[in-house]
Length: 298
Image 1 (cartoon, rainbow, N blue to C red):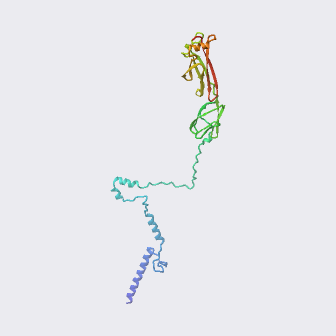
Image 2 (image 1 turned 135 degrees about the vertical axis):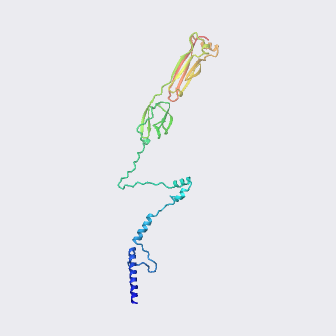
Image 3 (image 1 turned 120 degrees about the vertical axis):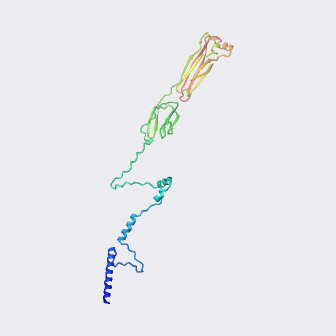
């Protein structure tokens, strides 16, 4: 009987040693750390080995943002229609290659663009050959983006042309921004009157002849003839030919009786005169010219 108990003891001892060896090989913790809470619930304990295994699982896991990517089995993709397959593939966002930032690299600030010259910084006023004349209507173009001032005369808006009337100024100052330029004004020339005798006149010339044909051709010359006021006075009829040229015919007697009354007590040849008065309405120039019709008979 005692021998049977010894055999059982040896067997239990062998089993105990075997369990201890297995537990040791498996890496089990055999210290006296508490594994059950006071309320009987198992105590949560994460060993370094378990933590390492958890991190390994996380590293091998594939996390996909479904708002950006489409996931589909390869076998399903192969059986899709070509157009649908292309649509699915195109939905994949392109990979963005990033360049590592060298922390030692100095980041340069973007160069500030130099402001363009404002019109107020114009160094020289360049608007071609400017020709301005006294006592007339002049025209000038402003090619700049700011007003052009003709000091004492007018202001021309940007990018526009304006007409203005000058007086007796010898010069005018043009101002654009802070730049100025002085322009000399040409003088306004006085008009001229030219007379050309067309008909023959003398003691043998008849009144009826002079009153039926052109006697004189009068021409008015001026640099600005459009601002002239031209008037004829005396016994004459005037016909304008164009270009400020006029044909003048004598219109002195309505009858032979009027002719006899005019020549009574006078010696031939006789004469009747007419006058041309020309006035520049802006410059104020005034000139006049006179010529005579000469005749001897009715």
